[in-house]
Image 1: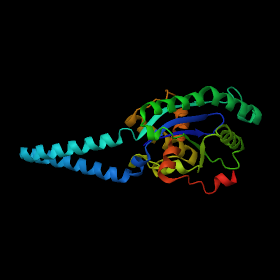
Image 2 (image 1 turned 135 degrees about the vertical axis):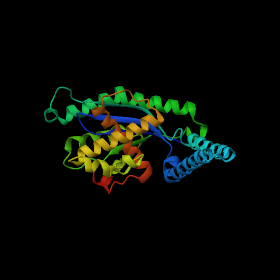
Image 3 (image 1 turned 60 degrees about the horizontal axis):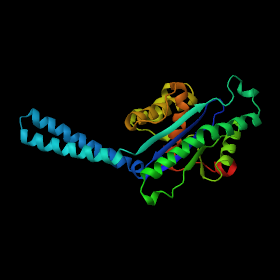
Image 4 (image 1 turned 120 degrees about the vertical axis):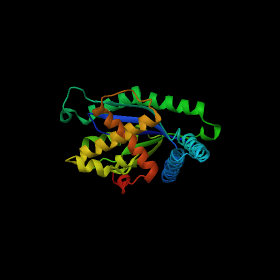
Length: 258
């Protein structure tokens, strides 16, 4: 059963959100699914070897088994992640971040939540009700907000305001490095990006964008197109959902110290 998530990247000049649906059982069984994929590929390789050796009967039998295994995996993982909607916005366009007061910033956030985020979430929930069986219709969305460390005062004000705006929903605060633990392939592991970039910020963004792009290729996406540099912020908001599903909040008491 899928859960609808609304997740935020709390930066102030590039405030981003993502609405997605995730099937936790599928993601949590990722190691087992990878093992089955490896086995299916091995069957296909054995079929090719049998064909090359002239054993048509064995090749046909192995190819059929590989196709059946691949089809089963495809059915099980087809809706593991649904990228429903998302966006990134400058809350104070044309102005330096330091020149925007906290009041102006939160007022702009409130307007954006009402005009863009709430309708996106409502549409996602309406779609879920239309598609899901009755037992899942009582589910409410889970709001995922990344913990903002003390020095990041402007973003911390945004995060606190989001908790208030979504007081009627379930809210979870997740650790800021949680998304770095998620990779959809060996090439997408965080360590590869940490070696290529001179600072953790660049590595974090590149890692999130790489893995998010892979998700979009595999599962498709309802998120409108954006330039890659801006899409990285939407990627952050999505990847922290997957981090939460796979590893828990990893907040290290952040919610109590907020």
